[in-house]
Image (cartoon, one colour):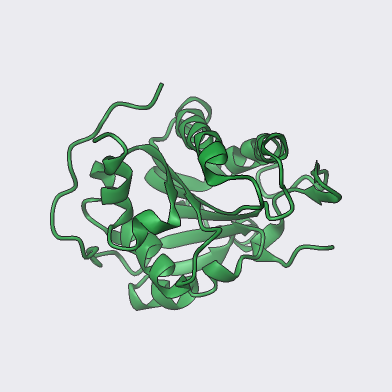
Length: 229
């Protein structure tokens, strides 16, 4: 069932991990290159007031400014389960934002196991997205070095992009963002919502994995394309 979440998890040290509904607190080869992004660094805010962005997953402090930023851009954020229960007709969402807390996963193999577990759940969620939608997986990592886990995040982004096409017949852009060291949640919200509403975001990479520091001076579109340079 699309709206349901499996309660089973994967061991990360002593903590079982799975996607949790609506940011509830936890209990103790690459795709082809796209053309360069058009326009200035500041993201466009032209978007219909009816645009909906779904939120799902673990509570992450770095995502607490999303609602305020979305409201300022005429975007409605909805909790995933609420959207499923009160969906009207064939309404589809413009984007999905998933928070994933891997802070208890200190080893690379634990990160792999956890992401394999939630991969299918994220793909199931894509059934509620419109074509050309965006999926953002925001991760808070643990002690595993970023240089070792970033390739795992890249693989996840690529698989989500391909699965959306094969499972749901839609084209999505999937971005995994390692926000372990994020200290500016307002800027993170601006980058994500800016990408959702940008008229040039679809010209970015269809699948990418980014570190927080890459977004300090660049939009998500620009940072994702820099991986190919």
